[in-house]
Image 1 (cartoon, rainbow, N blue to C red):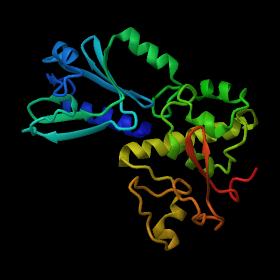
Image 2: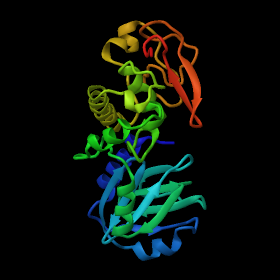
Image 3: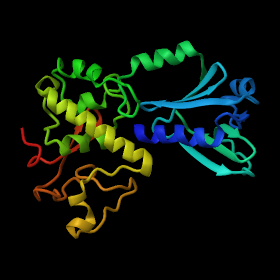
Image 4: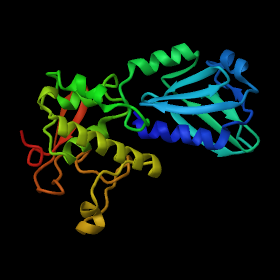
Length: 268
């Protein structure tokens, strides 16, 4: 599932291509056809993200999109190719098109319904003004592992499996520590780190988490080869040596997701 930086990047992509311009809205697949007909010919007023949720504002209505596990976007220049019957939503203007396929959610919502989605989500490291104290209040009272808490979108919005594993490694925190055992300074440092890492993810459209001294060039090691791209410390590196201590990276199932960590660098 795409992490929060991808959704914020999509909001930027929509803004750059469609904002303040009339858009043609259609649903070749048909599942969004009735709503598309209501929106067709309006201007895209704004595009924004909160966690893994994308919102496209057209006048007083919003298209709410959640990509889920299978959702994908394709952008291109006109002329747009003939839309296939897998395209749930197509936006089109004189210069660009955007095709959405396979999302978990693509729905027309009101301002009130949009607010309800925001209200149930935790603070997002990429949203200016979001307060990390809201997350800290819940983390500091919880006996749940910090690894599980970071993946709970009601506590922190936008963090997925990669950022979860990597930020815990970067701060030497055992993923199985209960939230109540995380110190306030540790949480503040992790939040600031997530802000910077995820901003870089938006800029580069990929996740890189290794510090300059641990890049392939600095260490004289081969670059990572993985369909997720990016240089990381532990994510999807199970049984491989740690870049720092040479210990073996471990993996385990936690809340139906694969957890990755280095026991040597993230000791209890």
